[in-house]
Length: 150
Image (cartoon, rainbow, N blue to C red):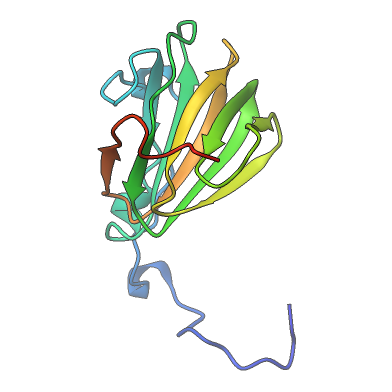
């Protein structure tokens, strides 16, 4: 913290004057659903979309079945995509990167929005936090041969 820096934001604010919503989401297994793009993991919304008016989304994702097959090459229409692995590991291929990228427990991946990638493997005990900018985004599959030529 720079003590002599000028503030960039209005503050300090009381919670009733804050422009974002205050939220606390206690942990509950009941909050996980299987409403998501992958059939072998379940998802828990962490409430950031509601708190930020959709500017940021975050999900707690955990595996409940063995990894079936690669996701296939795809990209997300977003400005930022971050993955923090809590348990296990996940392995990606990225267009333009020659070698697979493995993120292990405690590791964080900052993936630029729009980059073509393919999830090629993961541990059976995978658990991660995924943060997206914005919260709502499109995912677009790529035809075989259109990405992954690295």
